[in-house]
Length: 552
Image (cartoon, rainbow, N blue to C red; front, side, top):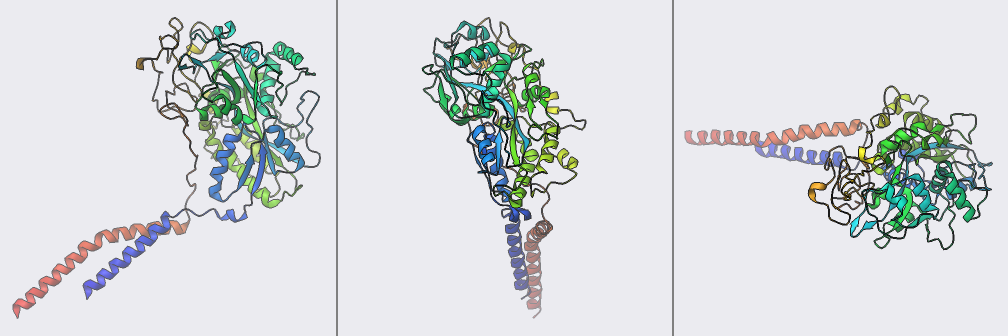
C-alpha cells in the first residue's frame, strides 16, 4: 500500500511538472497594454519601406496592428494632408520648391516631423562582361548625372572607363530606370545633381522644358530617350534585377539592392574616394547635415540641409546620404483620436529605440542620439501618446550603435577608412558591393588591394583571387570585410535570403511565470530522485517480508 501511495505521489509530481512546463513554454501573452491598441494606418515613402515593414512585423507580437502603404513620399504627404491616413512617411518635408509647386503644409491638420531612417540612395545596376557579372563598378558624380540626363549612353564610354581602370566594359546601351511616381528618392537625387552637377542638370531641364530648373519629386523623361520609369523603389529594383535587363541602372534605397542580391555603384566623393553607403559611411556623411532645431517653426523643425554633406571632405563619406521622416498628427482631426495616438506613440517609441538597433543590417544607418531625443519630444505632441517626461535614461538604454556616453556618434567614429584601391587613380578594388559581394576580376596593371585579382575581364576568378577577409566574423551589411555570401540577406551562392526579422521577448517575465519555472525545477529534481528512492523502499520491504517468512 505504501508503495502504491508513493507511486501515486510520483504520478502527481509528473502531472504537475508537465503542466508547469506547458505553461512556461506556451507563447508569451501580449503586454497588458495591448488591450488599448487599435489599428493605425500610414502611407508614403518606399525608400523607408523595408525598415517600416520589418518594424510592422516586430510590433505585432505586442498586439499592435500597424498598416502601411508604400505609395511614394508625394502621395503619402498628400494623403496625410487630406486626412485619409493617420500618419505618413516622407523623404522630404512639405514646402520644398519643385518647379512652380511648393507643396504647402497642411492648414487644417497639426503635424510634426520625426526622423525615422537614415540611409543612402544608390545606383543599383545589372551589367556583365561576357558571362561575368560586374560587382565593383565605380562612377563619378559627373558620370552618374551624364547617365541620367542622356549624355552618356554606352557602358564603354571613355568617361566611365576612366572611373574603372580595372574593367573593360562592353559597348552596351545604358538603360536608366527612374521613378514614375512622385518620390523622395527622386527629390534627393535631383537635389544632389542641382548642388553638385548644376550645368548638366540645367542643360537637361532645357531638354525637358522644365523651368524653373529645381529639384523635383517626379523625374522628367525625354520621350524616346530609352529611359524606363517604374513605380516605387521596389518597381525600380525589380526591373533592374531581371535576368534579361543587362545594361540597366536605377536609383533605389540601399536596402533594395541588398535584398535583390545586386551590386551598387561606388560613387566618387569630394575626398577622391569611391564609396558605397555602408551604415558607417552614411553616419560619417550625415555628421555634416544641418538639422533645423528651431522649435518655433513646426513646418521646418528637424528638417535637413544636406549641402555640406555633398562636400564633406572625409574620405568615408557617401554623398547621397539623407534622413527620412514620419509625419505625425498633433491634433484630433479627420478621425484621429487618443486611442490611435496611444498606439502610434508606442510604435514610435519602438521605432526610435529597439528599431534603430536593427536598421544597419537592413541597409540603413541608425539615428544618432540627438535625433532620437528630438524624436521622443515630437512623439509627446501626438494626442494620446504615453511618453515619459524624463526619457534620457530610456533613450540611453537603447541598443543603438551610434550612442556613446559623451554624445559622439560611435558608428561614425569607428567607421574604417576606405581601402587604398578605392581611391581615384590607376588601381581598382575587385570586391563586390551591395547585395553582390563576390569579386569581379580586374585587369592586370589595375590590380586593387583587398580582393584584387589579375584575371582578365570575362575570365573566371580563381579561388586564390577571392576577396580579402572572406568569412570574417564582423561582416556587416555593405562592410568592406564581407566576403561572397556574407552579410545579412545574402545566401552562400550570392543570392538573397527571404527572412523575417523577429525580436526576442524583452524585459523580465511576470512573477507568476517565474514561480512556475521555479516549481518546474523543483518538480524535475523530485522526478529524478523519486524512482531510486521508491526502488530502495521496495527492496527493503521485500527483505523484511522474506525475513519474516523465514522466521515462520
